[in-house]
Amino acid sequence: PPVRPSHASNPSPELPSGRGVCRARTSSAFNSSRHVADRTDTFSRPRVSDDNPFSEALFRTLKYRPSFPQRPFASVEDARAWVTRFVAWYNTEHRHSAIRFVTPDDRHFGCEHALLARRREVYQRAKARHPERWSRDTRNWTPMGPVRLGPSPNLTPAVQEMKRIG
Image (cartoon, rainbow, N blue to C red; front, side):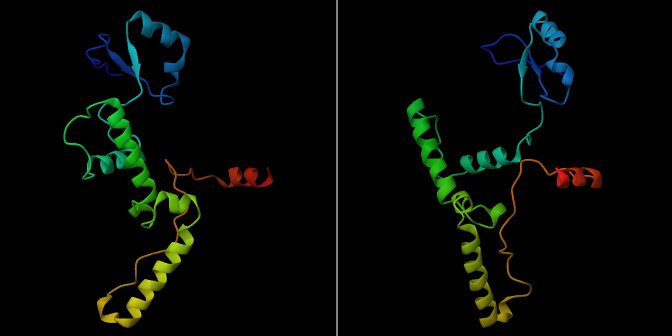
């Protein structure tokens, strides 16, 4: 694996640690050799910006907020206060396109189905009143299913049967 120089405060090089990609990295022999070679672990992968698309999307939303400061925060307390306000806005006001323009709180507290049903009715009435404005169907307002960090594995029929019978 590539070795990269670390931050200035830590003079030893960093060795990317895959956490499951390479099981040998968790072995005691590997860890001993890493310490002898004066290497430290990092849990990020070099040149991979999309490790977690959810956190990447959150960070992009954060950076492009009009209230995002142009200069560094004056103190840790100022940074914490800004992030607290951002998280409250993100969860309670920001409508997410990936979940049919509802807020995370709408989904979490079970309001999603009613909101989307009302939107579907509004769109259907608008289309009925002015069909010339619509060249296709209205937007899909059916609630999203579960959102996962990774796709669900395709289970073989044998595994499905084992899960079914317990």
